[in-house]
Length: 138
Image 1 (cartoon, helix red, strand yellow):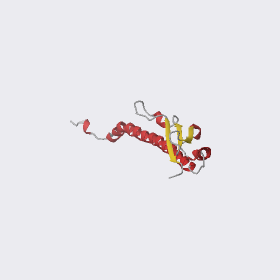
Image 2 (image 1 turned 30 degrees about the horizontal axis):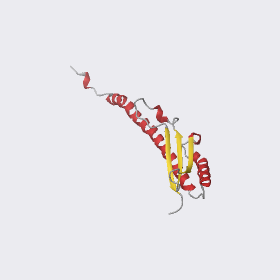
Image 3 (image 1 turned 180 degrees about the vertical axis):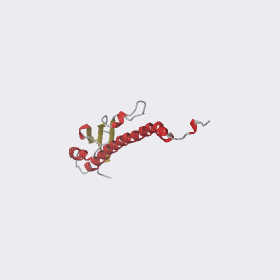
Image 4 (image 1 turned 60 degrees about the vertical axis):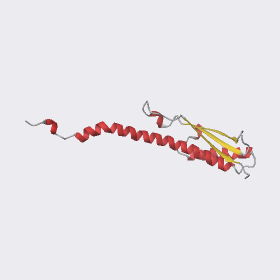
């Protein structure tokens, strides 16, 4: 009497059917988090470059104009950042007059990370980054 359970045909297909949803969930999760982290890095890079450029300004109004025009002209160059969703605040630091601060907030609700499964720990829907530079002097 032959035992039917000894047949190994189709085991790879069954294993694939069981494990592929888990692998796909990990894959799409890594892609979604990667897009979010790429957008966060782009916002930080934009703030840092604007702050560095603004150091050349002689007074607050000039530094502010330089930073705002840099952000306006370069934000569209970052593929993961929609310039319309950026909130910009640039000014001398209220607590230290020798510092210039560039604050950027980005509304990231349109990124694919929010379409992941319920119960997954997700970051904030707003990416807020700040860059501070010292204004002249020693």
